[in-house]
Length: 314
Image 1 (cartoon, rainbow, N blue to C red):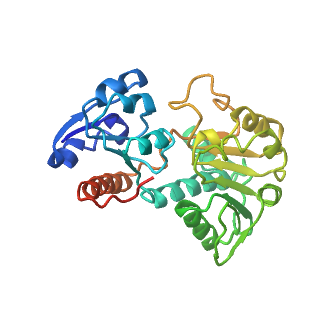
Image 2: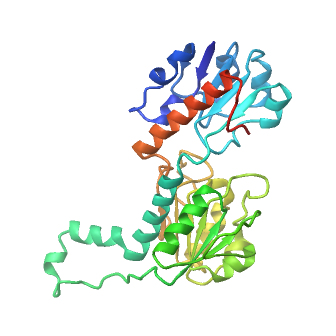
């Protein structure tokens, strides 16, 4: 069969897609594909693999032989799934591949904030420690996370892992989700209660019509004074101008995001350069081990589809 991979560059230079997918047929690999190029490139393909390439109904119409779309991601908001279903195209994602990595990055952001890692590192790199009167210069206030309340929005595999880690370090865990389920040590609450009581708010829900810009000016205004906001989910769940204002003028004490609405981040992003906002470039999912697991799962999904037993369908 003819298989087209539209955005191989998003997988990292240390990944060789040709090695992973050549056994399945003729593989056509593009580093990146712009929206205007999608229809032409997937025409004649029986299978398409992509990470963030948008595939619309009009693109599918130009690919009458297309029967399978495999995602290198858990989220699938870049695919017109309804149009795919109408055309008999199977769409498969990779749930759970980045659970540990994203939970790890969430706490890297949280602990860096409470321990002021970047500020103290900059202080010593500037050669200032040698001039300190004491061995511990108290330049920046640090705080313990033990005993604080973390509010988790979304309780899929990543949200659950974040809750486990939070419990292990002695945090109180609140969760807001549309589908509460029994969980020891976790208290399920309404969205307003989570905002009102959480010292740290961390987002782990998918981007959809219900979650788009759920963190707007009203939501941030309802947050506990001094709360810290973390988003490693999708940029679209946040009104970025509202987040900027909430950090600059309160009630938030700061924020850390791994995702923004438009990626790569444009120069006029409302969050760019804002004091108190830490930004990492959508790398929470990207450890070496995580991407290796991702490739294996995408390959397994394709193999299962060809065997007539599709898995991880959306």
